[in-house]
Image 1 (cartoon, helix red, strand yellow):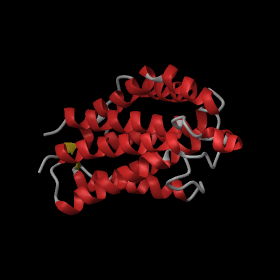
Image 2 (image 1 turned 90 degrees about the vertical axis):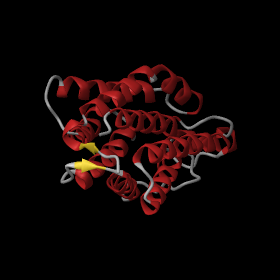
Image 3 (image 1 turned 60 degrees about the horizontal axis):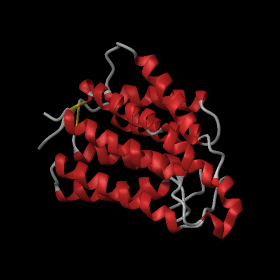
Image 4 (image 1 turned 180 degrees about the vertical axis):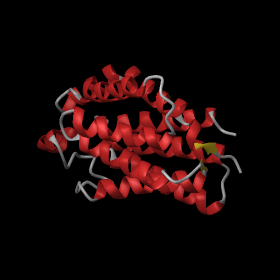
Length: 213
């Protein structure tokens, strides 16, 4: 069964960085439709600081996630720092002892990130937040682990679930954040946090696919 080495996961982290950097303007434009308009800039700042921090160092996938989480917690403004900081830190803690990461390990890491997030936010699926992207991804990966799905196929399922989750936010009414003040008028626009979550998870999946052994 395909796995990847935790130790050799730095390219996955850099793929995630590049994805955020490449979509910073889109994310801010999207956020500007019903929010503060700074989501892309804030995410780009945090991920760029992370890339500069790890530099030429050898760093494992879970070590990198832990460092990324710490940087997002402390260096970017708004609610997204604690939100993404929690997700990545919990993923790192759950996978830290694993030398190799397959479907079951990745599913457990993602689920830990979601459960950790649930401890600090009230948002749940249907509330037009990044939870609408992350929760279906966790469900897809849990099912893949239960069925013994090979990792390449599971990564495709992950991306499909992220896409569906993100798309679902367009027709939802925002329940949290600045956009919640708009009520019904928040419908018709994709949630920026759900979009960044999709972009990050897709990049992570693509990065993992590139380092499989």
